[in-house]
Length: 395
Image (cartoon, rainbow, N blue to C red; front, side, top):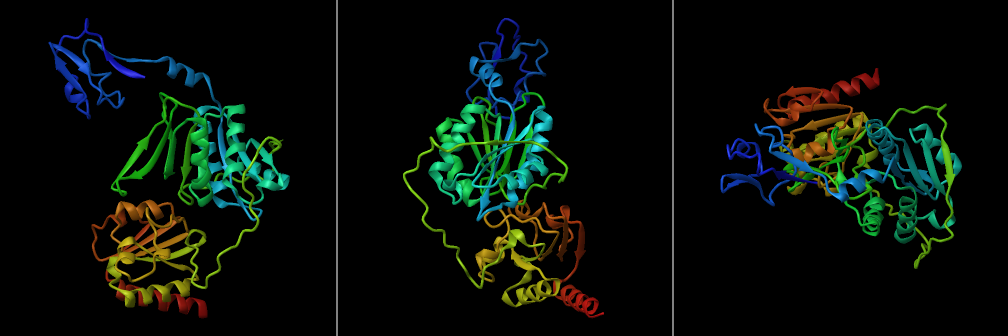
């Protein structure tokens, strides 16, 4: 796809010049020209009074629209349990499929038919199930080989996976095998109403901007999605779908997983599974301030999180960091204490059900996403809150 100017119609009026945000239109010899800077934003198409600017569809564009149908979700499992991000992707996949007018399928390796039925109840119309022993433990090579084979055979239009250690490890291999694009670490997905392309939104340039990325010329369109940034779909216990059993006879692997050893640490913090998170930023002031947050978290039965600023100051370990360069969380309650609300932090927590912000600055960006905001000194507010919670528990 590219933009072209009909020189016979163009009058050189220069109306189109100001419409282009990329300065990709020039006037040469009294006629407009589109340069290589064009990003296909299509802003110029409607402004030309003579209708001289138009869009040209190439053979590759026609081919891509003829091939591929359906939204696929890679349903991840660890130790026989379906990962939570799989249910979130099914919810996102269902919303995309409704806009595309197609179905949603889950691809599930190493699980059972009972697990596959659970995926159907969470929104899958069809589940491609391979229960071969080879897939019980994650291994890059067989996972990539089998998923690539299934995609080539059935030609889905969109394929999604979680931006987890598993997804980040083998999904790029699949994209490379298929010679298609892959957008990693997405925080939002949508469908372009006109072109039906997948709009893949992710932080870029250190989180300073949110970039919308398209893959217009190859299929499938592939993306990994951060856990806890999207809501799960509707659970329907009566829902029925199709389970397609897939064999692994032709899937080879040069390596074999002998044993998986889980790291055990008394200091482990599972923020992504926490229902209540008390998070602190630069406004907490130091380690002493974080002691208040730990006390409040203990009263609530929650975990302590932090912004990057607090971690960089050395007040709390990195494993507590929430944001673009830390964990992405979606608890039922998120209390932000002394956090201004930089976009890098908001990306990691704005999907929380209820957000309470406590900050001295009434203009802090955190209040734009907060469900409830308290303008005041956290060192006055938190002790009162801790006292009240303890009183309620003791009553």
